Image (cartoon, rainbow, N blue to C red; front, top):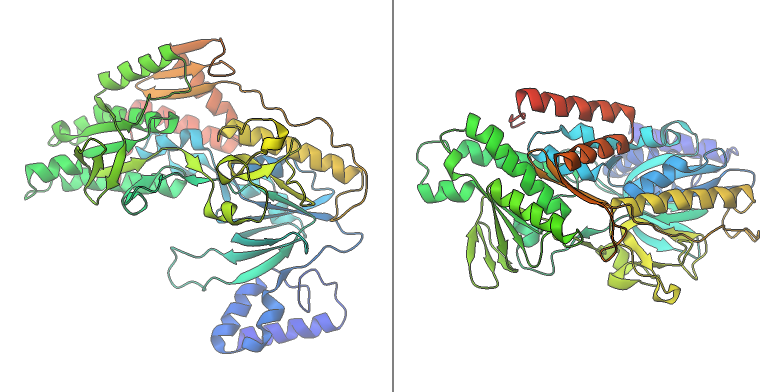
Length: 501
């Protein structure tokens, strides 16, 4: 009954006149929800509405509250550049870190360690762990009430044993920013979600690495048939975009340099197949695409042009009827709007994304903005929907942070402010180019601003050096830059870590 006593004491304190920072009867912290959940298990259901209601509206004289949904490229850059002397920042996300996605494929085969690509939010924006009115809330947004300026959230606890059951709460906002990203596109193909592994999060990379090493070790155990051994050691990648090509290159390099040395008994059974419906790296220069094809084939990757029609537990079926057995299936066919984004009562852009104007505002909904993969320009703006790229998301996050800082300094930071504010120039995206590695010290650098324009395109070792240098400088913190540099050096000297942990 300790939790029950705690909640009763908090209620008594609140009735003595403490400032209501949270919904309910007192200045509760988000941690009080855990106590309330424990009280619910004990049978004290009567006190639950007070403790579980959440963060209430900001009072006059307090900082305005910016609620950010997501910790991807867009949301993280926004929070990094937001002026916390005038804003409180509340981040709602199912993960407490940003993933440096361009290097994620390297973690699957041990070139880099997982922590090298995960940047804690507290390092990106220290206010969420130190400022009294700023928080990181481990939860997902489930609903939005624009009229009341509130969002409904549910805590994220899946995958953990003996933890609290998820509970719901509300958060009031002065400014709301959607940066919740997108989800992998499966095109409605049966079996993809159940049997394929995506490559978007650190836990995806961990799953790929565990399964790859497990298959290697099981194939070396006596009693396994030849056919089953070949299936287990057949790695299939679906999708010929930068992620699929980079993972295929890393995997073939891993097989050539490490597997053949440390798993010599099964080295001749390991194969990689890359399946793409059209051309691989279709946004790159034609010459670079051909170079990538030649390099992948040279490193042992089998390229198949086809469309996947069905995915089963141990094989997939193509549109021509061919059956492709696999031991590891990685799905990398692009992204689309999530079911949550599609369900929102906002104007929509192409593909179900949240529609925004030239200032990244959601029209007809005050104080709501959207950035990153979850949004796109409305047709009325006359602009094309931007590609789902990290550089697009990061640029939008920086732009919106500057816009919100300008609004705050003009006195319009709070909800429903009637202050006339000059929002500044419209958001304009200028493409800086594309890069991709194809394994074994080879990469592609395409500096054209669009698919049809002219520009510099480089392939080979020089491109690989540019690729590594560029991404090393783009890693958010010096701590992670050091991790990445040390990982690259140790891999070059000692080979990849093939421990299955």
